[in-house]
Each structure stands twice: as structure tokens, then as C-alpha cells.
Image 1: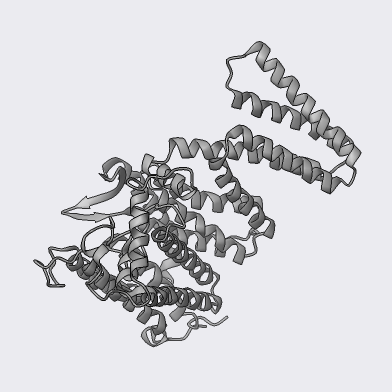
Image 2: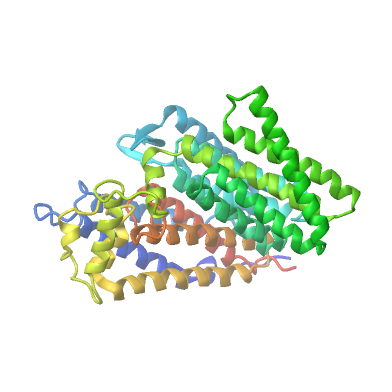
Length: 474
């Protein structure tokens, strides 16, 4: 049974007001970031702040159109939207324009559209449709495989542009699986592989293999509670590995040391796996499987880092990890950003009074580093206010997601929160030097039409679903 409702009355106006306020702050911040005394009018459409105002007005119109759309439209067209977004990601690799080494934009009559921003929306809809419609349990291998495909397909296409920043955001959608009952062990292993990713960049491959084998052996000792048997197994694995290494040096001395090492470890693991089966140590095969997977993953991290990231992206990651120091190169943005925010003090220098901003010390200040303008001109108080608003918005959206009667609306709500949280955390983290500079916008504040429209549509689809949550009684 259904009943008619007033969508505009049921709309969560608290969230709408936060959205409007953040866009207003963004508009003023962009004006301040590129302020020129020769062009003082904030409505000058030849400047970026004037263009941003046009995009804001267009975003509000789009938001109203989304609210007036039937709520059934979004789950019904979730898969077609996803397919269309994948098609756009393919086409942009062929027909897109290249900017700063990335082929990620379509250009029409001076207007640039970035398909990756809208692909986030489409992927969130597809995830919500699949998770709410599948009869399989979320921990079922087939369900996990399908969800992995939905997330990783756009990630792979975006990495070809290459745009590592946007690709990272898609991975945050994994978080919604835990709300839907994904096994907690997955969280543990994700944390382990995150640590491995960092260690793989800090250590040599040989060092990483030695560390992983040592950790696996210590775990084997703890779990086995039989030191003598564990020592024998470790000795057997070591002897097998050394034997294989010796054969390599005799028959193929030109083979790279990394290849010799990984093959030797795999050979030793196979022998230990067989012995473990004989002694019925059930945990041993799992432990060895994890060891082999971790070693292969370590080498894949190095491969992706060396072959799929742009030189400036690799440099920025190395700077954050403390491997490199380039104060006049890749470190320049971060250093100037921290100087700008720190110079704001408690209450800031005042609107249009930021010296770091006015003299263009911080590159990309109206886009990736827009938070610098807020920090310098409004100080710690202004920065804390914006961060608090973002936190309140995320908490509000979580509250709205939990009250949904529809699984589709609930899952989509959590997807929205995951994407916003990732953008906010990484963008602000970039400006204060906590994460590498990977170039993603601050939602509703950074300059740009694609991101503003995509975030607007994403947010108001959820608000439309929430407004109609009582329409169908069950």
C-alpha cells in the first residue's frame, strides 16, 4: 500500500542548508584565492569565481530536478547509469583532452567535464542495487567477486588516465560492505595489506620477503604451541629454499636476485604445506597461503608504483614517507600550504587579506588547496568551523541512512558518506602534509563544475530517497 507525500516538506532541510552554506563558503574562498584588484566584481563571469557562481546556480537547478524525480527511477536505472559511466571512462581515453599529464576530461566549447566524478555516483548506485537485490550472502565468494568487479572496473580505467586520486576514492566503497555484514577478518587483512603497501615502499623487496617469512615463522610458533615441531618445519622450509637458490646460481646465474628469492620461498612453502597436512596442522596452510599472497602483493605494489604512477605522484608519496626531500620541487606545494594555514593564527588575517593567497605562493589554491585560503584568512576558528560542519554533515547522513526502510536507500546513503569522508579527509590531509598530494577536490568548496554537480546529484538522490521513505508501507 502506498500513500501520497509532500516531497518538499519531507526533505531534510538541515542537510540542504549545510550544502548551501558550504557552496557559499567555496564561492567566497575561490574569489579570495584568485582576487585581482583589476577585476573586483565577484560576479565577473570571465573569472573562475564568476564561472563557479554559474555552476552553483546550475547545481541548485539540478538538485531541484533530482528532488522532483520519482524515487523508483534511481534503483531502476542504476545498472544503465553504471554501464554508461564505464563507456565514458573508455571514451575519455580516446577522445579526452590531456591536462597536467592526465587524459581525464572531455572538452565542449570551453566546458570541461570529468567522467570520473560522475562514475563515483554511478558506482555507488550500482553497489546499492546489487547489495539490495542479491539473494546471496555478502560473505559468499561469488558475491564478493561481483562487488569487486563493480568497484575495480572503473578503478582500472581511471588508473589508465592516470588519476590515482579518483581511483583511491572508489576503494572507499568497500567500507559499506561492513555495514551489510562483511566478515570482520576482512577488516584485519585490509589493515595488514595497507601496512604492507607502506612497508613495500620503504623497504627493499629482499628485506620485505625476509620480514614476512620471519613474521610467518613467529606466528607459526605461537599458534602451534610445539616449538620443536615448528623449528623442524622452519628448518625444512629454509633448507628447501637454500637448495632452490643454489640450483638457480648453478644453472641460471643471470636471473635477478628478486626472482630467485621469491621462487625459493614459494618452493619452501610448498614443502612446508605438505608437511603441515601430514601433521594435520590446519592453521598452517592458511598461514602459508597468506605468506605467499603477501609476498606477491609486495612485488605488485612496487610494480604499480614504478610503472603506473606519474613521476610527480611518486615523488609526492616519497616525500610524505620521508624518503625524499624536495623543498623547491614537489615539497613546495605542501610547505607553502602549511605556511599559509599556520600564518592564519587563531582568527585569521581577514577576508581578502591573506598574503600567501594574494601573492600566489600556493599553486592550485582555488582547487586542490582551497582549504589554505580558509585557514589563512579565517584562521584556526574558521578551519575548525568548516571541519565541524563536514563532520556534522557526515553524522547527519549516517543518521538518515540508518532510518531508511529500503535496503537500496540505506546502502546508497553509506556509499555517499564513504565517498564524502574520503574526499574530505584526503583533501584536508593534503594541505597539512599528512597524506600525499593526489589531487582530489574538497566537496562543495573547491573550484570546478564536474565535482560540484556530481556531489550535488549524489547528495540529492539520497535526500530524495529519504524524503520518500514512508511512501511505501511494509
